[in-house]
Length: 277
Image 1 (cartoon, rainbow, N blue to C red):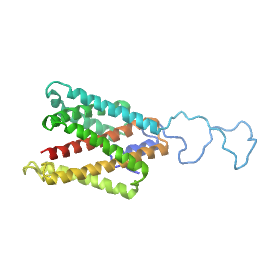
Image 2 (tube, one colour):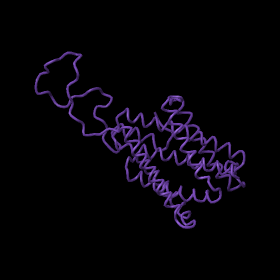
Image 3 (cartoon, rainbow, N blue to C red):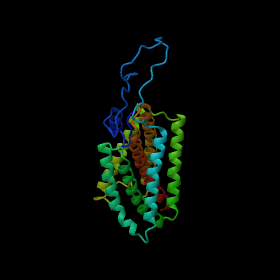
Image 4 (spheres, one colour):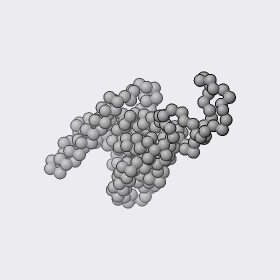
């Protein structure tokens, strides 16, 4: 099932087909396969007997522990980079924000289009996003004291809440649900682009980021879309585990989750600033 997250999709299909960062499980989807001819006749050929032993595979398949561990490491790197940037005296760190954002975008595109399940690439993206978030957060907190703490708590609450919703099955990730979320995602991105272009000709553009009622409603919608995207990301991780992708693919899952959570945090931070105004 495809995910709305740009980090997922083709990379997942490539991993399960064996052309990703590691080899695909041998014989997956084709039923049990034996390795080599038996050296002697089977002593018991009942159809109800257990299958003969298999040669241990050299491929280690991804587990939920792999996803949790790799995602936790990526988030830790992001937080540490953000804290280090914030600790820079004055607003010197803010000057790094644009460069870090551009570099992070390039790394994200490379990871997405090359389907890289690579720890160095994922952690490099996490560090760049941490620099960007640290600088942006410092600027927001200087103008609206305490807003960063509120945004972090809000992001964590949404993440945990959506994880509970997914695990309890309160919202089931079906093909129809996926199509709705993907459509809403592209619709929101299109509106952001149109608003950005309109801002060059009309003060405030379409008003989607001007801080008024329209901006608040739009931010709430975007936060809802980002939160629902987490459900698709969780489902993608479960699907990858069920299909038996290599353990290395967990770095790709971690990258995708980081993309969604960073987007969610920035949108919550923006919404809180509107209320402070």
